[in-house]
Length: 312
Image 1: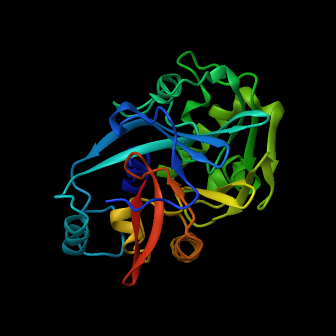
Image 2 (image 1 turned 90 degrees about the vertical axis):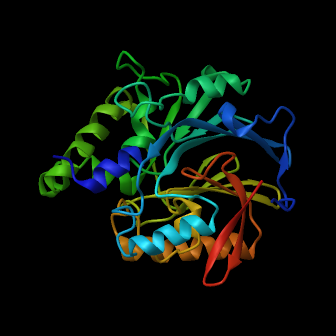
């Protein structure tokens, strides 16, 4: 039987944003994509799907009582106990072509209602064939599944594949797999299978590396061993693609010390989350969240002992 951590892993009024403006053709959130402009750089958030979690007051937060989780949901205007978990990828238009950050579940093995990323990329007026670089925040299944198409072949046969070196070292290590809890071992096998068609051309990057023009990695360890976030820059303007370093804003932005069950190193994850949110709030930096409700973009404000997301 799968461990609850791994089950949840797989299922799991706006002020004007500084330096971030809606682009022409921006879709309503329900249409699966949202476009913004960072200076002259077009950024498109696309949605791979939505999964309904029936009761997140039990088991999702490892260090908060169900009543506290219910109160946080209510404060955010969410009745609970259920929650809609969204899965959002980011496409950055650079001078070298489209850069895709994470790939969703893909058409193989994801929960019902997922695997829609490529359809939403096309709906946004972009051609998946123009994706020149695919980069990853980390290797959990909802971020790497879309490497394969419905037939099990490479979905991006002509793209450069760039991965955090710490993620590759951990998830592709047979020794780590042999020492892992039984419930986590399928994730090691999944990483090997998803990257197999690309093995000869996977590029591993170090923390702080520029992975594409204007796209720089930031080490944000804790959620997974080598988790990376990305800073998209144009001149002095910047946007932060958070990945899973900060999960559902109503819970883990409002209470950054809370630990979601899928954070692999809780102490490091909490320190990372606070540092990242501090920076975003201090610099009034627009952010994109993988598990934020669409449109999944906004800015971070301090609120009491935590933070809140002001959606774009």
